[in-house]
Image (cartoon, rainbow, N blue to C red; front, top):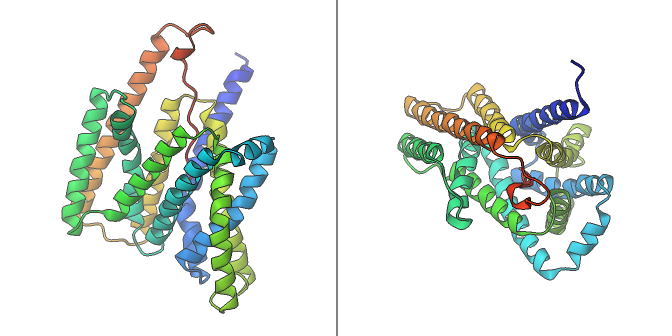
Length: 321
């Protein structure tokens, strides 16, 4: 049977989704190379904002969304929400960079395993979305995993919780903002650019910067832009072309890669910590089972027509890391 254009596009979109999460899975290695070149986590953060805005602008221009930027800039309320979302995603970014550059990569992995489950809880509390039986079981298993992790560490896994909470909060805010992923990311990076430039200028003039110390350090810090924007572009393109249940399955690819990076780098992994991840992985499997079951149920339902717009939901493409 000859593949149809639609099936070819679906396969291409699925490949783009896999590539996106591979980017996010291996991104700790890029941040660690920047650190090996001498850059501190805060310096990496500054370069991520500054070079990210350049790549985000390129993405907006490719999507021909220049008018959307001007429209957003004219709306103080939208700009206020995007300023808040920029602050929250900056907190998420710096927490992640600090974690992977200080031997806490496993904590970062746990944070992004928890994120979809926290999103589900937030949806129920804030948007009054119904949680399925599988969802409740997954959240219960995750709670047990966090409790065991707390016992293993001797304190709550604050890095993991911080990453999950900030990213969930970011997603909640972006759902309320009338700006798509590309435009919103550009405005957020633009907001973060001024403090980033000021900090970079101070570092370089005080002799503490690493941008000009060697061609290698320059190259790695310049890469902070594309490693931020390219996976978002892939995600945004894929999320609108394949089922959300497929994206829900793929999203666990990144923290799994991050977990194995942390383990391969010799981070402490006691029996209790392994047990906590077993509960988290069980929660993930239940979550995926629930998502697949729900998707099959929707596929078996009557197809929505143009007179029934309420039955069709557009993919939410908010997902920068």
